[in-house]
Image (cartoon, rainbow over all chains, first blue to last red; front, top):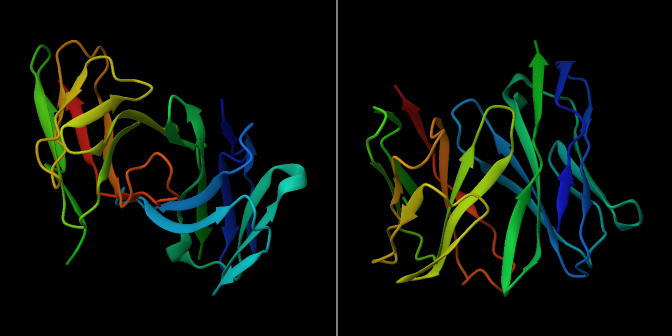
Length: 117
Length: 116
């Protein structure tokens, strides 16, 4: 079975501070995919990034960056110079083989980020 | 615009009633999914469909039913057998048939169901 742990339930930062959201995963599968989604107050989940288990290169997209470390089973997400619009719940998710020909997407419980002006 | 639509946005149900939540996509995706989200929780999979006329139970299928008669549509019925149906329901779709692909799931805006 797979599991995703987001230990930080809520984080508050002041605008322009950097913030890192932690994600630790568990799976026995050797080929898997990791995702981050953003859920603003409106409720819709917005896809941010997908990373496969064979690609440990870090990725940067504007103010967002992701650090994938297979050795520690972590896929952390950093927002640089945070803005009020970054306030949302962020979910880390793992897609791996779950048996019977099925690949399920397992979500962490999310981290609520509040950016204070 | 391509995307996933869910209706209604808010739904109120009396105890003992069945209700159906709509999910439509025009992304030409093969696979569709229904998730339930409770406050402070992650998403839990209710049902998924990898192809028309086929669907599979997820982790919490009891008290729910689905159909997949058309590629674009995947309605979810919350039956009176669902003991605690008040939640936020999210529909998603992905382009492949789900099983062996890397497909990213894209989500609709959600339906908030409240049982009175």
